[in-house]
Image (cartoon, rainbow, N blue to C red; front, side, top):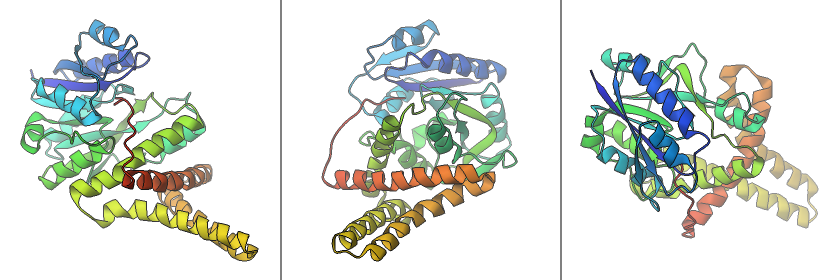
Length: 322
């Protein structure tokens, strides 16, 4: 019987870790593969570690590390020929391993990830933001250059050959790592035949904006590790352009040029509109388009703020949640 090691970084996830571990075990049983559960705890002060142990997981307590380091520590003790990384608030479907192992056996890919969705209880902004990444169900698989690590499956030899996650990145470590896998010849496949559920959705606006500010802080670090490229510069430059247009609109208002100010403000709406149409057109849902338009407008402003803070060597840290 094949063996899989499932590595789950965690910080104060007592609400979700039991569900995550149970779903992972069910998926392994359905695929007839032996499952090794490894939870790497970042110093939780809730019942998460005890709950993880009750499910038979090996719990490594390693406070003070960034998310990439937590994943690497878990992988270092993994004994399976397969290696999976799951965030502590992700519920995998029961056919997760069955379908992805079949795809690998058919030589369709080397590294795999399932699309994510939110539970029905999530607020509209969390659901819309997650849904933007979903593809129509008739597009079951898609080759990509990078994958998020909310769920990631690969043979352990790929991890050993390429090396682990970058341990200096506060966020964006999944993009950096899977881009590196792709450069080393691994075929990355995003799968949409079934979806995983993200239970750690943002419950209020403050949390959503805080997470986006945190996520966008990775752009400068990615540029430092991968070099300057249009792919990595595109979004930071777009967000900075929006800030410049905002500034010009304010200046125009101060000097009494209201018409020019309105033109500048209208121009700030165009990039977010283009992004929202691009991501929602496949869903044929006008409501989703409008929701994403507003969310992208906010995100563009947050991204430029995060980029400027990164340039100024802002070193604020948050625990490395799974």
